[in-house]
Length: 156
Image (cartoon, rainbow, N blue to C red; front, top):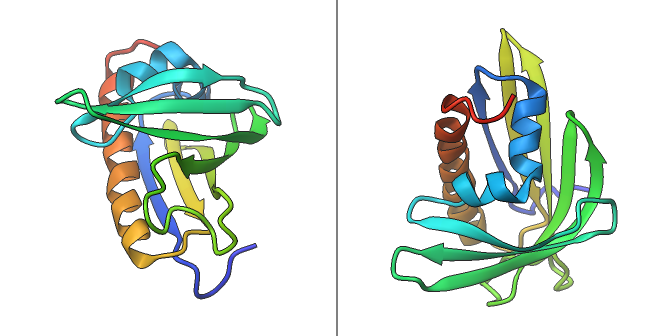
């Protein structure tokens, strides 16, 4: 449940592609490694057990080879409509956990309209405005990278 005082990230982008193609880009490790990450970073998928209760773990690597580990658990998988998972950082980035120290919550909705798909990300349960600001840019950058991936016509 959302608190009125808890920072929330909300970003979205529209793509001229099917919900299935967009959903598959988010749920296929080889695809994720091609596009996922904010500017200057790419994900290396270390584990990806795509089922409710299954764990995921990424190493986000920058251009210098330095990385940050992010991990969580898949909560809801409803192809091609919705993907929900928890999110935390092993490096304990300030404010990236909820007020109890638990992982935060990410919901990705895939909505069909106007001959394409809108991908909506909602990242909740953050502790700090600074975390919200950083993650807004990070998620926005990832969605921009996804546009390039989908434009290549790789999925479908």
